[in-house]
Length: 86
Image: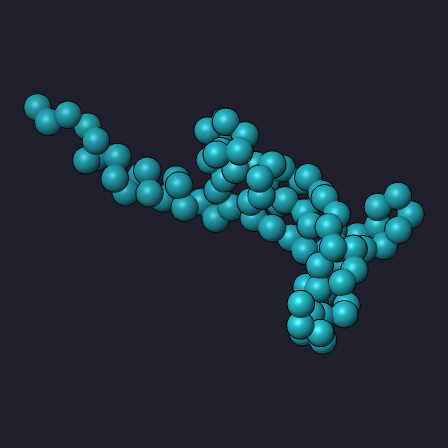
C-alpha cells in the first residue's frame, strides 16, 4: 500500500436515521456540525434520510418515507388518471 494517502482523522461518529430514529456508531472522517450523547460519550452526529434499517429492500416491508409531502402531492395530481373511464 502507498504511504500517507489515507486520512488520519478517523474517529467514531453517530449516524441517525431520521425516518425511524435509529442511531448507529461507525468510524468516519466526515465533518459534522451537531453532536449527540450516547451512554455518556459525545459523538459527532450525521443525520440520514434513509439507511438499511428503514429501506424496503433490506427490511422487506413496503413503507413510504415522505418528509416533504411529495407522495401526497403526487397522488393528488395523478389520482384522476388511475380512475377507470366511463
